[in-house]
Amino acid sequence: SDNDAELGTFASALAAQLMRRASSIAQEYFDKDVLALLVVQLSQATGGGSPLQPAAALTALCNAVPEAAAAAVKLRCVKQLCALLDASIATHVGAKLCAAVAAIANADADCADAVAKAGGFRAMAHATFLSNRRMSAATATVAADAIATAVGKTTNFKELAWLVEALPFPSPEAARAAKAAAADADDGAPAAVDDPKHVAAVLKALGTLLGAGGKEAMCIEFGKRGSLAKAQQAKHGGPLCKEGLKVLNGAFPKNMVDATDPNYERELLKKLPLQ
Image 1 (cartoon, helix red, strand yellow):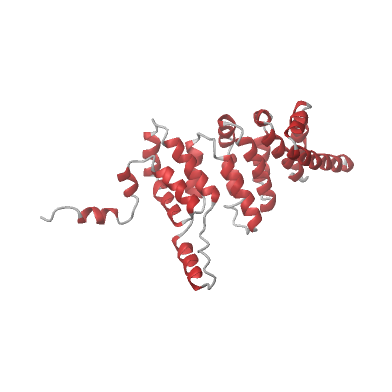
Image 2 (tube, helix red, strand yellow):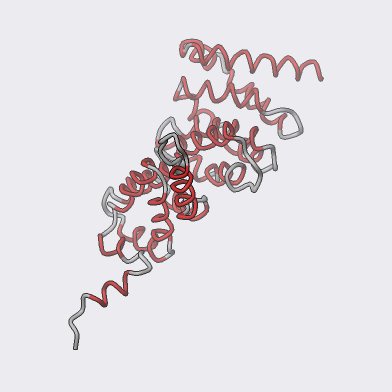
């Protein structure tokens, strides 16, 4: 009934607040199988209810109790969250759902890979930065934090590579505009350089994976697809992006990274002896 739905919404909101205050409360709720109730509420949300409260409670639970994330994977929570993210929801709702997906993925590598395999990373990106809908700065921050957290422990090359290829990267035009704006200002403030946290995290995660050894075939594939060249756009970002790019490039031979430069062949020809 409507009253039951309203009561469930209130209970989820209250539970989320309490679990954020103390991990012991979250553990107690997990022991009492609150997760099963949240799964029911999420399934009701796919039929038109609000997913915000059960998603917030799920986020708080998995952040406080890592074993809850593994249980959530078994209960197919990731599939439910992906279905909600794919439903053309408002971006601020999508960002909150992304936080729930991230809380599951952040528990350990198995959970992260389960999220990746279920299409969680793609659903997060499509509902936020690839949605072609305007996001507020606050919503963009929540979404960026969620994606950055979600990819940190995965070993799924395919999904990380897809994120590199799909996500918007800092552009040289934006970097020049920021520099020009700073030069025109009279307060001496530095340029507000675009430095997307989620892009930096994806590059770092992929670089860590490829740099672990025995990943030569993945490196070759990544290069052939033009993805390594796309990744170099991160140099137009701020310190986070540049550090992430440094980790990624460190997994490749230097000449392979150099070859991504459009002027590489011209510079190479200049070094050849004249006939």
